[in-house]
Image (cartoon, rainbow, N blue to C red; front, side, top):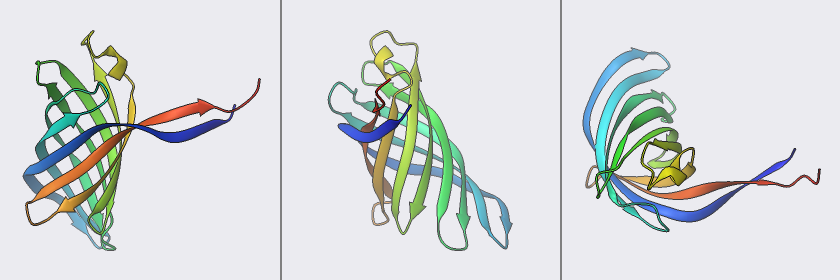
Length: 144
């Protein structure tokens, strides 16, 4: 089976701020750290507005490239909770994230297993991470 992957509809805009960071390991290849952040989400196309909090590990190589694993909880403005997990790559203040979601909320059950692609930038002036999230669509292109 062949699958075509495409960026779909815009789902949200996100603004995150770091709230904690500590170095856990450093060697000749780079620095590994633990970080936490919180932020706000403005939803589009049925994706809810709300606030999120997350944490994870990142590795910054001597070449300046950062690779991170994150997870956290997104709480909608109506109080529904949605868990997320993601992985990102950051180079020169620009980043891309693959993220997926899980929830027990019946209202947002369509979000379960949703895969999003986020693109963003680091705003050093305001100490923020600004991103836009898009639905990542999988289309079967085989004719079986």
